[in-house]
Image (cartoon, rainbow, N blue to C red; front, side, top):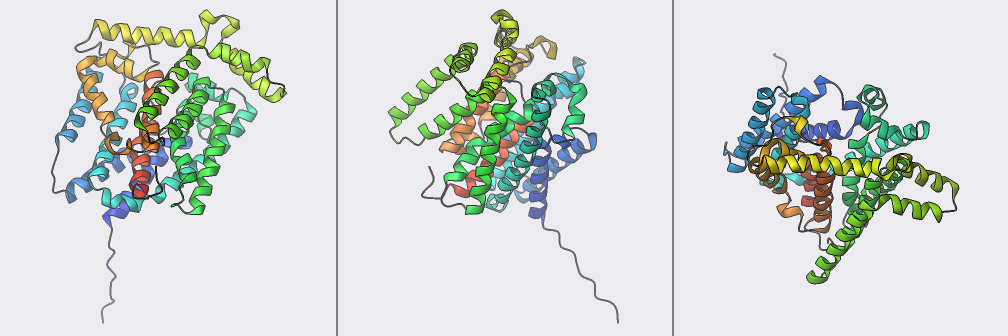
Length: 400
């Protein structure tokens, strides 16, 4: 008698879950930030998701996918033609790949509910990295700023789970999802408690990290999220306009705001933190050499070059001010490709922006792209985590 052999059946969708979880974990986890093997596995996971969905969709290729593919090919070609490092454009290429994953997810939204638990696995991971980063800040108060400016020490700290600029703004971008989870009565209590711990630890990290822009964005997103629940359309948009004006005023008057609170705060620990932020923002109390004035100078460099080279841009990374992803992209590639790229990154929001959590994430994401450089971990939040969350809870009558 021959021995019976069990056939091993591999579920393609289960592999999609694993691939999605790996992509997210790689993007948000500092210890996975370095290493060629990790990058290869990420692109392999993205490729698998694309092949799987194209296969079950009978190999239909839409114009949206073709446009993304053409933009990616052109960016790679230009990198070699100008002899610029591909690494400098890697964040854009990974973002395009993640947008592709988002597009194929949206085409098969009926299967996305099976991926919902990934959102809370991500919350647990972020809580872990938040704690590691807070421990790092306790040892070296300015560590997150040091990591943003020095690549020489970044890898050693990343292996300890300590995040830098990219990680901080990534968890900030996830805050609307966490806040919405906390108050959504249709979600299990365990998930809501997990979201509560994530939101609390993230706000502590944002304040301890001493990034003034991150602090005001974390306040703005709560205000925007609350405003989007106002049912009167006119009132809602008037309030959003007021919030936008207040945000701009706070951003350009950062030094005055910090001085105001420093002079009116009696608690020594908070006062020292505010003083530290002020000293980082304004070097030697000279506003001309402040962090904000440096930002404005870099914004102007990219803007002026984009205006003077509107068709195809400068091609090289060196023509940019390297402080605004959107302005830098227009300076490098011109208004034609820049317009196509903007339409690509906005397209996945056509459904999620209808709800407070989606609109808030979209608005904060756009502001971050205009005021900061791009980290590919931003895109995994708005193009994968947000849709996974949205497709699960959009049918809830209590939602919104």
